[in-house]
Image (tube, each protein chain N blue to C red):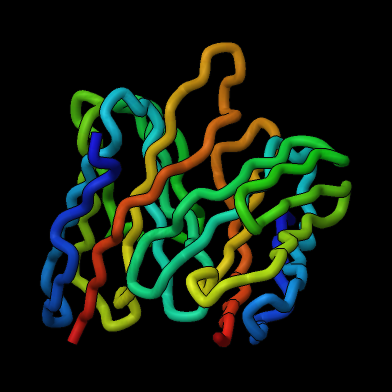
Length: 110
Length: 118
């Protein structure tokens, strides 16, 4: 069964303190792995898509990496405005569904 | 293009009533998805449209839920005989069809409709 597990559930960082969020997945043939940011009361905002192991993508202070079993979202020198819930999702090859994890709630303290 | 829009943004209803939500996807996006999200959880897939065809429904989707996408443009999600357990955020997302890379496309979400069933 396709499954996505994110850790930690919650993370508090001081401004400027770099860290990583983990997304472990089990899927029978990965079509793509997706990272989203979600602010309270809003819909998820697309960040990255990763398609194959070894792929990396960067955007400002965020960098996403992918292996055959997990993905990491690295946050370098975070700012308070990076505070949000970060969601990971996978799509199986040949399928239409996207399976989401429960997210990591990130709080960056000034 | 202003992105995916959903209406209403909030809906409060009494148990047993029917409700209908609307989603307007990004223009020319032929794929449309409905999700349900409860507090502390990730979005849960409900159904998927490619153009006007409903190609996939979650096995967890009750018969009280129905969705349409006439003419492959906007979509509606109806919940009949609402129950308190239906209280959630209902999210709509759309994605384009990329030439030569079918299915390799990101989803863009709307702001959601928050349903409260009393």
